[in-house]
Image (cartoon, rainbow, N blue to C red; front, side, top):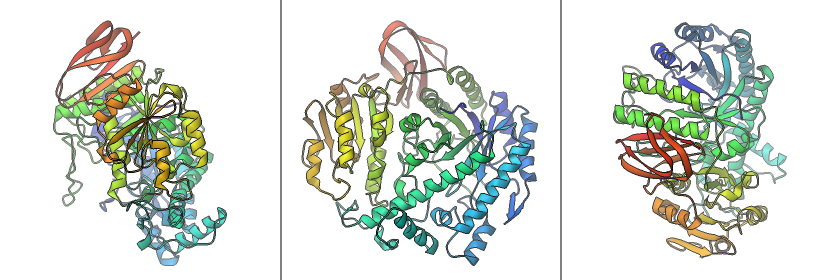
Length: 613
């Protein structure tokens, strides 16, 4: 794992007053973004002037001033430095005028990444920017975060369209992969489906599967290239991060370019991945969670940085006198505190870094929130570096290869993984997420008694052997969603589903079938999955249920956290008896010498319990 765990502040704007308040609360780590580009609203990301002025013209005095202004407020500050690799407006215009293809990487990421002139100039900027920062600010910069694409999160918004440069790159890609010569499919064909109005068939639509894989490899390959160049130019102790791997929460992760996340998990030059908290379950009472496959990140030795961009009720809605944002937010001060504590508890238990994203300011102004922040930072300092043992007995398994089969604009496919994760958040037990390909390397795999396979469409002979060796015949329960094994990598055949599900494809409702040494559960309509269904399967599998209520719970061997919107008395049953159970936000002793205790929750509330053996 990376050596650093960050507890940091981030804002698009300087917000020097808030940086000072965070410093008073003990927060000395700040994310900076010396940007050259506009956001999705057409406004400058950065209040400081651009530093990339023309093809070979740079003025890094604005970077120096940004860092100097923050150090003047907090002389102890250290920085996570985002590197803006997106196209300044002048570069996008110049390259589009004089070269084939769109080169505005913010809106047309894969087009720009296929553009040789864009890459040449952007790599030159990267070298000059890093050279300046390493020469003048190495003592205060702890990591560099490579940012590009829509919202600087490496999201591709071309919707699959291919201009001349990208089309030529696709033909070259086919040649490298020893595939027959072929052209990028027309935009009108990208939504074609051959099965259930939802899926591409590898027999009749192989070119669509190939093309979507190409676009995702373009993104992951470019990130790996930029990371390798960065690694050459910065100190070994300076870490490299990137926003990537958003497959747990997005409709159309393949269209976004994030499906080839396994490549970056293997990339030696990347230390940590970043993602915001889930957008689909972030309201008070929701379970939050990472957009990435966190268990696979851990197996790969990568750190995670969780972005808490959930809006408090005081967030600044006015970017300018003309531009106003009204987006969902937590409703009041009590909810803000409960929500912040939920995000802290999630990160401490999962051993993730965390930053509080103040966007355009106003999130953290109330004295109550700042007092809460100081108390949370105190807990973070005590807990973050401790060694914890995982206790999950439930895992959600994602197959990135199967993601390519879906019509990416169909809202149905978005319901599948999103709903599975949302319902698991209410199971009352901790769970982990993994890639199917990582199953052989999961430590203590026998601990997992319930495995939920999120739409494992493609089960090739190699994957079938993997499942037979590591998953089946181990006296566990397996929940298959939609159509396990529908594809063998060559054709689609509903008849294959019964081998895994125990019943025919399309069988309505939740069915369970005893197999040879394991129990197969099948749900054809993943959008109908409920916590009650999962609780029944978990009980059958012998999973330890910490509580009967349908509410978020995180746990390891030393900590348990529960979040609730409604409050009230709750009973929590621990895995074993502990000498003392202490609620850390209040300091109250919840129980002694027992494995069962009760706690009175406020409405709303988050409690974090330390388990003392």
